[in-house]
Length: 421
Image (cartoon, rainbow, N blue to C red; front, side, top):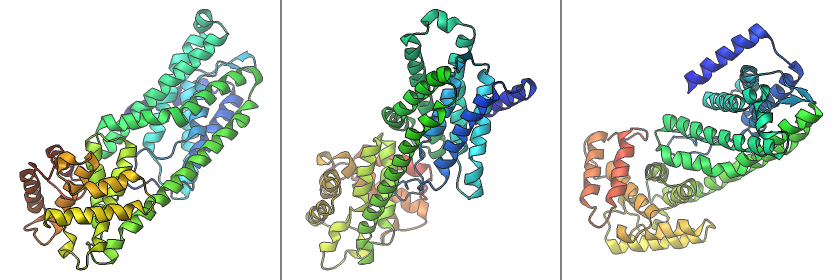
């Protein structure tokens, strides 16, 4: 993907340098829109949500609706103030590349991280939209087929929907390459986000292309205002979500501060549980419930008079485990988190055939972390991990779901979470 975007950018820049920029005022207006959108996407944006403390950030990041609308609106611009637009596909790519790079200057100067994959996606999706529109429009075939009535609007919306689908495919592929997570759930999460910000981007890009075709460039800043509000709203939502998760993580640390569980145990279980959930194809909302439950899975130990050695609940009798789980669920219900989280916490000590999938994951991951880091662990880390997985596999008749155990082994084999298989 990087190679395709880079090659296309080089060809477009050379062609534009050779032939010059046509209708420079339109290129400057849309380029400024893209550059501003890219800059405010990164500068002072909230950090990506941690993936349960496992060290892998959320690959989707913050959307940039302003830049996306600018790129797509320019790619679908057929007329400018009643006159035919003179730019073509390669000039569209040139403007998108130059503006995207210009928009990254401020974040780089401030030391903010930038994502080259995001720029590559922007270039490829804008080029796709331009290829599907510009040649047909400039040759007159589009007008011959659809005329200048409502059918052209339908064509633009259908093309934008297809472009959004292509962008989702590219985003999932980049996330798969970066994280090693299964492609199917990543693509499903990207597709689920399209009816929200994606629909607003497609509709605004179509409106911008059509209004600029008739009225000139003055609608460009006017249509940018609602997109700025969308981006601000998303940033606020991301900040609230991060604060909410940090609050839950702070509550989960109560057992560590009180000396009932080892330091970092809840974060480790949460990160590994989320990775196993992704391996099993859970959607993002279910992964969030799983992560919260994993963070708070030991909170019932606060009811114990004497702490369990090393906080390891797996060796306890089944009745004691169930008591701790029920008490933990009762505590979680009073914290204001979703009821699904409390259900997972209070069901984690049941036989796995009676548990929801999230409870099966939390129990297996918790047992694994206790076996490899508790007092019973023997030998090097790799040997302890193999023995722990063997113990889990031997207990799949009642305690652990064999599908979950194998998914855990697959995640551990990648070495992402610090424990090689």
